[in-house]
Image (cartoon, rainbow, N blue to C red; front, side, top):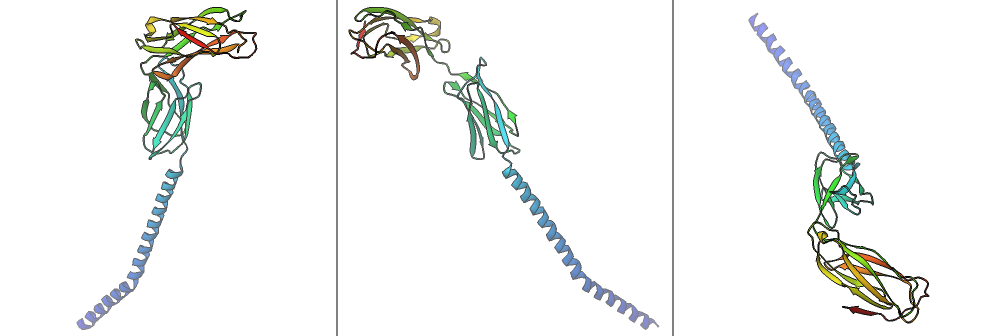
Length: 260
């Protein structure tokens, strides 16, 4: 009896082992398949996320650029730098700018505003859709040339002498020094200026009055012209003094320039 019971138990154990051996490959294959499918889905999600970041270039930055007196600065450049490249725009006459096509990401972008004659300003911004930021630029200390007045000669007679005047200012930063000179004038008649140039003019000095003496040529001449005054340290800083001598036909004669 004992031997029969022992044999039955042994047969049962062998059957269990045989069934387990048959079922195990299917279970393992199922798990591997599921793991592979899960891994595939995860990769697709990451790729989708990456595609979304790369193509999401809908950020924008807009605002105004002004000076310390809150006056608009035209022609200022606003540049947004990111990922080794940049987008930029220049302000209009109202000081307004709009920079678009900026990638949206969880990062800060170096943004600068600059204009010749002003200290640049930079800031780190997190830019999304319709982000706004206003820049205030401080003027670099220095002179700024300005003229006031015009020469309007009337009832001109050929060969006669006429007088007039205009003013030269330094409207730059306090205590700045302006060096200036008369760069050009009409090529008809004889012109005399006193002074013809100056140096060290500060805003605190007020205007310099330039006396003008004009002798009309002996023949008819172009009735309009201008005097150009220039900052000798900055050729782009100029001012114009308009001249009118109406009612004469257009002709030209040799000019003479006298410096006293």
